[in-house]
Amino acid sequence: MKVKINGGTENYRTVWLDGLKVRLINQLKLPYKFEIFQCRDYQETASAIRDMVVRGAPAIGATAAYGLAQAVNSFDGKFDELGPFVESAKSTLATRPTAHDLFDGLDYVGRAVMAAGGLDDAKTQSIAASCRYADESAQRCRKIGEIGQKLIKDGARVLTHCNAGALGCVDYGTALAPIRFASGRGIFVWVDETRPRLQGARLTAWELAQEGINHSIIADNAAGYFMQNGEVDIVIVGADRIAKNADVVNKIGTYEKAILAKENGIPFYVAAPTTTIDKTCACGKDAIIEERTTDEVLFAEGPDKRGVIQKIRIANPASSAKNPAFDVTPAKYVAGIITEGGII
Ligand code: MRU
Image (cartoon, rainbow, N blue to C red; front, top):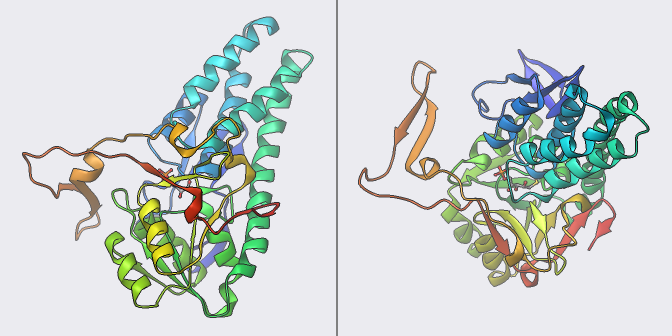
């Protein structure tokens, strides 16, 4: 990912390992401030995932993989006690229930650790496996970009929901990868703001601006208007979990965009690596949908005139709220799933 700092351009991944510290682009500070967050141990890495310092399915998968390597390297018991410790560290790191990649990253490193011949070997293998997982994750997204760009016609107007960009992955993005690859062809992106946490308005818009890709942020409830008026040519979103029957679990609001796309004859694509596919999940209804704090609905956050971040209530003080973070889009609304291996 290219980030413009003081007029120059630097390349960053969303997450990386620095010695035994996990470093992350702090997504809680964007778009107002570009800051690197540091997790000194696996408990801090678990908190960073839970608190959404890092978010997005492939990004939390790689972060959890690094976190498990931190855990294994902190272990000072006997080798035959390592198995139970790894299981408990995996549960500590699995702080969000919906994105399948989180569990995939943990299992990947867990398998490498369990195949080791001794404790020192397990420590070395955990670091090697976590770095390999992150590299492979970035390459999967690059392939999704190469393959998916072919679906985007020159000058197309693409609608996307949430942030399925490089920030939600190790690099490139899922839904934004094809958009990045097609960016030289005069395309335009409609960015759903994505209430309540505004991943679209804050993160996707920031990424597109960094890359110089034309875009406009729209209110979540405006997508139908633009579709009906013939101003959307294709919809591409990411996914947090894909069931065996191809139902797609993604950020809340995805389902209604899919129905609107079908109604208006617009192809609706999902871009996701195969690590997002959960072969044990028969259909979308089997996935656990994360419920987040209702503060996300009842309050808004942003900088005041002095640049100080303020949290203000935006809803009736006497009212409560509900905040499911994801919904299920039935497979019948999905034109195709763009994976690193091709379009399913
Ligand atoms: O709650 P979040 O911000 O982690 O949700 C992220 C999404 O729903 C993304 O669309 C998804 O992970 C797609 S791939 C980056």
